[in-house]
Structures are given as C-alpha cells and as structure tokens.
Image (cartoon, rainbow, N blue to C red; front, side):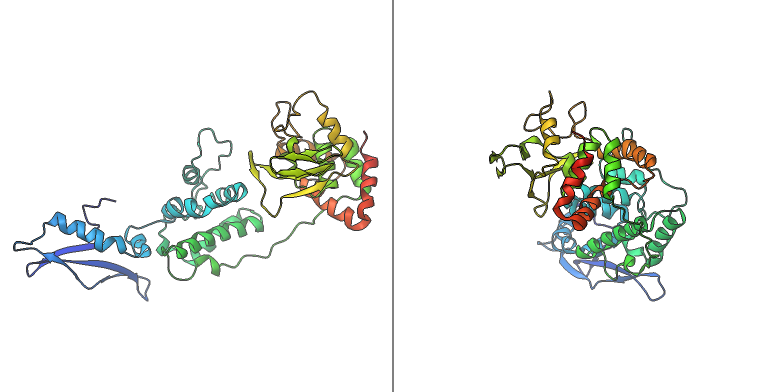
Amino acid sequence: MDRGKLPHYVDLYLESGFWKLRIDMDSINANGLEEHLWRDPAWIGPATGPNRLTKKEVQRIAWENFLARINPGMLARKTGMTIADFVESKFVPEHVASKGAAGRTHYKAILKHVLEPEEVQRIFGEDTERSRVKLKAIPDWPYLSNMRLLDVRPGHVEKLTSAATERGYSTQTVTHIRNVVSAIFSHAQKKQFFHGENPASLVVLPGMNRKEAHALTLDQTRSVLEIMRYPEKEMTLTAILTSMNVAEICGLQWKFVNLSAEPVESENGIIPPRTIAIRRQWYRGQLSDVKNTRGRNLPIPDALLPALVRLKDRPRFKEPCDFVFVSQAGTPINETNVASRRLKAIGGELNMPWLSWQVFRRTHKALLYNFGADYQSHVALAFRH
C-alpha cells in the first residue's frame, strides 16, 4: 500500500492552523445497513508558523503513528478484503502451510468448492496448463470468492452446502466444505480480521450415512491373494500381517528394513533383528517423515519374511535408499493407480466391489481380534512362495 497517499477512509484536514485527522469506522446498524462513524479527530501538528508541517510530513506521521496501529479487522473492512484476499494473504500461508502434505492437499481440494477453482490453483501456485486435475467453475455456484469477510452470513454458507448436496456430493464432502469455511473464519477471528460469531457454526448439515466398513474373512483373504500379482500381492500381505497403512508401505525403503538375525545401525538408530522401522511415508507423490506417534519398530512376521527376502534378491532397486515396492522405473508404487486398475478388477471378479487398501488394514485388525497371532499362519497358507 502507498505510504504517501492516505486511504479513502482517512480524512486529513486543516482547522485553526493545525493539521487534524479522523478515521471513518464503518459499521452495520440494526437494519443491516452500513453507516459511517468517525473517530474523534486526532491532532497531528501545526500547519503554520516556524514548526509547521508540510502535507507530506503529515502523511508520514499519520501512517507511522495512527494507520499502522489500526485494528486489522477494521483495516480489512476499509480495504474491502474479500474471502479470496484473506485466503491468499493470510489463511493459506499462515494456517494451511503449517499442515502436513495430506492436510495441504485436503484444503486445496475442498477450497475449490468455496472459491473459484482457477483461483485456488493460482493461490497454491499450480500450473493450470499442466495440472491433470482441472475442476472448472460451476455456473451459478455460490462461490464466496468476492464476498467481503464482513458481509458473510450463515445463509451464504448454507447456500454453499445446499448446492453441494443438490449436486449429489456425499455428506462427508459437504461437511468438509462447511468445516473449511469455519476454519477460514476461525483464523480471521484469531487474527482480528473478523469479529462476531463464526457464520459456519450455525449451519446444520444432514446426518451422515456411513458405508459399511468391510473386512475380509480368512477365506476371502485366501481368494484375494490367490489371484493377485506383484506389487499388490506383496503390499496386501504386508498390510494384513502388520499395522502399516498404504502410505507407509509405499514409502518403505530398504535402509529401514532389517532382514538379518542381527541388529543393524541406520540413520535413525539401531534396527533390531528382522524388524521394519516405520520412519517415512509416501503420500500423493511426496516422501515425508511420519508423525512422531506413528514412528515405530515392527517385527517382521514369519509369513512376510520370505516375500521380503525375494524382493531383496531382485537384480535392481535393492540399495538402501531404494523403495521396497517399486515400479519398473524404480519409483514408489502409486497406490491410487494400483487400486483403480488392479484392486477394482479383482474386487469385481470376486464380487467384492468395495475392495480397497483400507479394507486390508481393517482385515488385519479383524483377524487379529478373532484369531490372535495364529491368524498369520492361516494367511501364510494363501500366499504361494
């Protein structure tokens, strides 16, 4: 902002030989109309005499002693800060940027239903020409992009969630949209850019119809493994026999796997014999450290050890920094592609249209609960060495 010229909401004037300044504090009255309330005039300095101040000097003093101290919320109103302005200048760099890769991806995806998609792509620095995901603006969609923070009411948020519901979005997605709007206004309240009740907090959503949480039986596990091939077969076996999720499986590197009967030293300390050290994950094309609460050492089950030994004996991609589960090019497995191309086909063949990586994690928990540690030997029978 130009520190010479004063903004339109500042009135600088002469009175009785002195420079004076007053600031317009607009507000919304009981009828919902904007009205102008001027602060009491502030004395700046003499306009005449030997110590008189020039207009340029007065403007500098006004900026340094008055305007720089204006409450951010009032400044937001004065400059007409819109939702898009706030998201770009404050919410994304201060709130979203502090999240992990999964959190940032989630916000970027949901914000495309709150702001115009092209605008979100620009805010996140996406190359709109090269991006494979090109969600385009929907005609008549009640985007909040150009609305001022000050003007948003619960009804505007409700229009947004209603539009999503009418378009057939799941209740979970509609809830995410409401929650992201709520997060925007919570951050605006925290930074004093918005005062009053969060407009998203008053929006009531329809009840969520949760899908049945499927898990495989031992017979189903046997049927699935019998028709699988690399890499989904070994990845599925790992998921069912351990507590690893698919991001941890895809991000597993040989330097964190000890197949020997002796302890080995790694960059993160000693790895016990026949142990997998969970330290990294591969999610949406990015390798990152797992959260502290997820870092752990897992004993390698007897049923899994032969499969890992065979992968270690392959001609290529067995160096410490190589990934255990790799494509022909040596890159980490893309779990989304495997799910859409292989798991979907296998699920269709076995009348299990719900087959997914999450199903395998639930299967681990279900089999462990029902059979105890003995379930591993049953699973091993289905895995042909």
